[in-house]
Picture 1 (cartoon, rainbow, N blue to C red):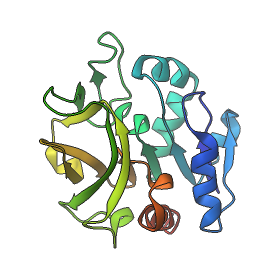
Picture 2: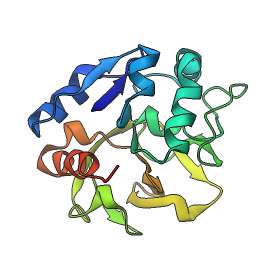
Picture 3: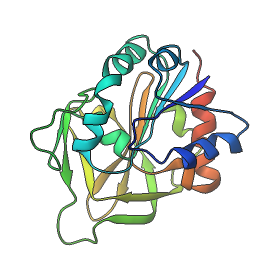
Picture 4: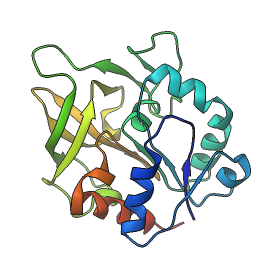
Amino acid sequence: MVTIIDYKSGNLRSISNGFKKIGVEPKITDNPEDIASADYLVLPGVGAFGTAMENLNPFKDLIYEHIAEDKPFLGICLGQQVLLSSSDEAPNVKGLELFKGHVEKIPEGRKIPHMGWNQINLIKDCPILNGVDKKSFYFVHSYHAILEDESNIAATCDYGIDIAAALSSNNLFSTQFHPEKSGVAGLKILKNFVNLEL
């Protein structure tokens, strides 16, 4: 079962429709029992880091337990950023710290937000990115992830700087872009995710 966490900070209909297009009927829920029993857990995200972390508070332990059991987890957009330790967007708010690092505003000198299509460059083997190297995906964000351990970066994109487009560690994955809004290549990522072995 693919379970999408409803924490009032995600574009739930869009990501749900993405899974439906590949023949998967996801469950959107804020029920702790449903989240605890999920095989595949998805954390979408639209909005601000501080609000997202406040809304995630009831679900943090469930997320940690899911990942500790090495079950597949996918964070999308803001759902990637909250996986880090902290963010410039909410300096006094602690992130989930599943990846050590900090979220910074995209530097001046380029259009903010970074909005539209951009090609990703795969920099390590990552099962959810199989078959999509050099493909273009849809981004919309003003902040980006800076990792302490760059071996957790699975793909980057060029926006005058290298932006961490995707992260991975074991069965923990995230994308800064929106796979559900990225056409055939994005659906390929969702399909790769649901085909991961449990």
